[in-house]
Length: 103
Image (cartoon, rainbow, N blue to C red; front, side):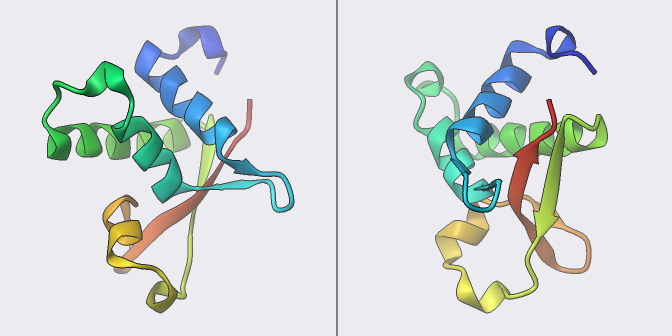
């Protein structure tokens, strides 16, 4: 999929992933991406739970389209409640905690 085919919000999410990329591992921590987008002044009037849900849905949609990869982490005990609240749920009671862009 070409970047031109993405919505403005898709591109904003993708840009946030790129901004938070840890070059040593080539991944971004999803809760940092979500917090970044939640703090964007452009969304100050949006209801917080709805915005978080929209971000989660966009992350999953971008992964299904092959634009990004979402990864889980089995060591859930090492993440805070806030971190897990800012990560989309994944299969088998886990969470998508890491991501990277393929474009």
